[in-house]
Length: 267
Image 1 (cartoon, helix red, strand yellow):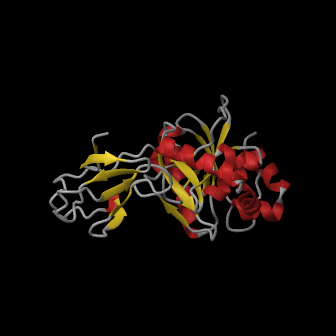
Image 2 (tube, rainbow, N blue to C red):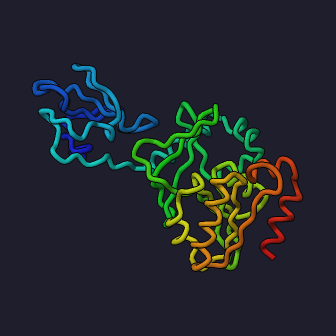
Image 3 (cartoon, rainbow, N blue to C red):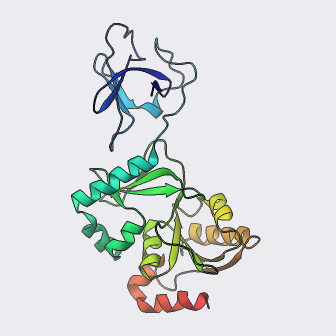
């Protein structure tokens, strides 16, 4: 690699790419270090002027001595980064608390490639061709963030083949998705009520689909809108929890009856 985000790489070590700092006249000794792997991939710091941040968040209007006129975004190797996080979770051995929180098995979290980045859990976001296009971070307090540079994608199970005429369940959010999968259904998830519509339209064309909506206004509206779009492309049914605000709460309250209701939809 000769450059990163438009900045010329003049050296590197085991952990960092080294460039001339774009924030000051850094012409004699390169002091601008960019992390090249692991959970802090893309983070930079200049050890001369003290500037720090993420390479994708550099001010586009800043005109420094070494800043290119057109600065391309950093080209993430999402597959490698996700693989690192999955390996970290194995070493960390920290699935137990998340399994308890979601009330799902270890195997289900593995199917959605749960990882650990030294601060929080991670889950890959995929496009309709199953390529990783970003990573969502889930903190112990339940807050969620996307790694800088991520695009909005879907939670897709890995290592499971979709059988012909198999019903695919579309859920809102990760917790509902893994809850649905834990009941034995093929479940894919979108990040929120309004995201991933075009990806779903391309992915689910010609398939049998059950949309599992949430009971709040945003969830109801989004489920009906997605139903209207998918109805032109595939065989679709829509269901809402009979108790609680979402599938996860419904399952906690009604257990195996939920599985029976969802199974009946596919008959």
